[in-house]
Length: 325
Image (tube, rainbow, N blue to C red; front, side, top):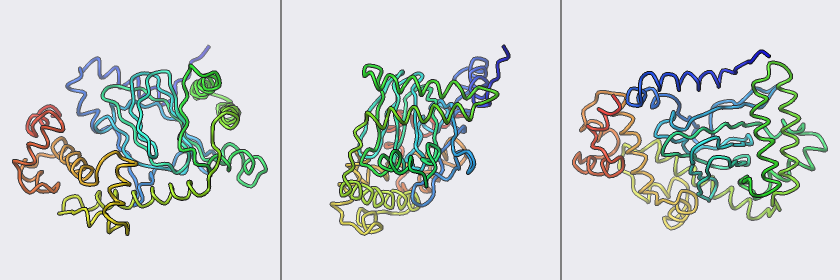
C-alpha cells in the first residue's frame, strides 16, 4: 500500500535527520528560528487556521522548535485539541496552570488565553477548528450542541486514559491525527470523527453555564490582555505598576490580582521576564553589544541586566550568545 506523508510529518522527519547529522549544538540556531506565535494588539493569534471553506487545520509540532521551547500567550476563536505524543508540557489555560505527560490530551475552548512550555522535546500533534466546522452556525445542531459549550464557563477539559470516557476521547483524537495522512476522504473522515469527539465532550464534560461568571471571566481576561499588550509595546521604556494598571482602567490591586489569577506572576515580574526574552532574541539574532541589548530592552544598568539574565537563563549574556551561535 502506498504511504502518503503529509508536509507536517516530512518537516518533522527532516528536523530529526538534521539533528542526527549536525548534533544538538548546531541545531540550536535552527530551533530558535523555527516558529513564534504572532498576535494582534489584543493577543489574538493573527494566523488563519484552515480556510473559510474548510475551517480546520492540523499541526504536528515539537515545542523544542519554538523560541524558548514555548508557545507564548495567545487566544483564538477556534477550538483546540492537543495530544501529547511524547514529553511533558506545562499548560497555562485561563486561570489554571498544570503539567501533562505523554498519552494525555486537552481541549481548549474558544477565546481562552493559553500558553504551552516544555523544558525539552515535546511532540504535540494538535488541531484547531472553528465551532461551525462541527455544525453550521445557523443550524439546530449548533444551537443545541455547540453554542452551550463555547458559551459556558468551561475553559478547558483534560483527557486522561484512566477515565473511560476520556480514554475514548483520546482514541478519537488519535484517529483524527492518523487520518490526516489519507490521500483521499481525509476531510470527510476528519469531520465525521470530530463530531464523534464533540459528542464525547458534550455528554461527559461539566460545562454547566453560569452566565455571570462567564462574563466576569471574559471581562477579566480582556483587561489582562490590554495590560500584557501594553507591556509588549512599551517594554523598552520605564514602566510603573500605575502605567500598567492605567492602560486597562483598573486599580493597582486589581492589576496585581489579574496577573496572579491568570499568569501566576506580578505585573513587574512579567515585564522583567518579557524584557529578558526579548534580550535573549537580540543576543541570538544580532551582533549588538551587550550594553546596547541591555538598553534596548529596558535595562538601563548593564550589570543589573547581566545578573538578572544569568539568574533567568543560567548563562551570562556572552555565554548565551556563544551557545546560540
